Length: 276
Ligand code: NAD
Image (cartoon, rainbow, N blue to C red; front, side):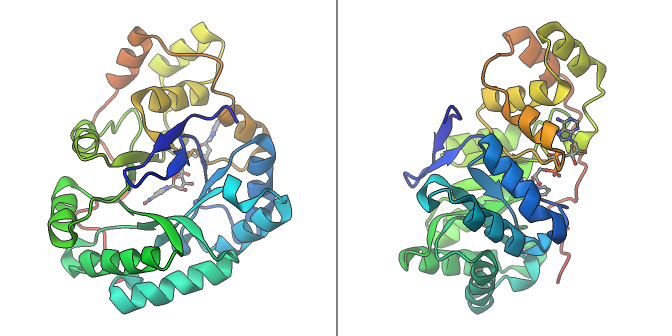
């Protein structure tokens, strides 16, 4: 396909544009994922806590797409952190997905107060050495969490999936990731839709005869982020994938980057401990 790829620090390759299924109801997710696969997405991002792994797995099987052409990510929920509980949670996710191999497993949140992400990552390493996972990474890790993880496990995670969009550009964390060959993956890349009527973005979209969502996805791609926009609407699923025949110039990139206010939409990783 024409989707650029990112080579991870373990040598595995991930499509730079994928499809996220947060908040897609279990009863809709098979159809929505099938639509994304039909349009051409080959990377799907789910999580145990989304409650829709089973339907994602069904869409994968029914698509008939060879398994090695797909890149499937799921995430370990907070309540399951710890060595043995991670091994069990992985088995449960895999049986819900109906897969015997996972491309990328992420620790969903660091939950620093629980102090369990190092043991959790050691279980990820064990599962990888059994050949059941390709790449192991983290989500919502701050610099301090990454430093602890790297010091205590001796391994640099392949991916850090973080809240990242024009109003939360995460300059410092992206720089830390880049310095350590950690790929940065942007969640809520469209700011959950809140950025689509921003006047700077609307202006650029008009100039380029593109949509605001396409402009924001281009901004991510040109920064080097892995990006996983979500939609349940077929026309938008297609629109968000149709981003490889135009470019933002330096001025447009700059004016979008000026929207950074450091304001989160989602929880603060320092304190978020849902499930525990
Ligand atoms: P998003 O930024 O992708 O925005 C999705 C929303 O934007 C849609 O529900 C819709 O309202 C709107 N939208 C999408 N495309 C549009 C278009 N072309 N035109 C108009 N409106 C459009 O938000 P998200 O779903 O929160 O994030 C994407 C993915 O990131 C999730 O599905 C999930 O896979 C992942 N995620 C991960 C975490 C984490 O903690 N690791 C947290 C949140 C999300």
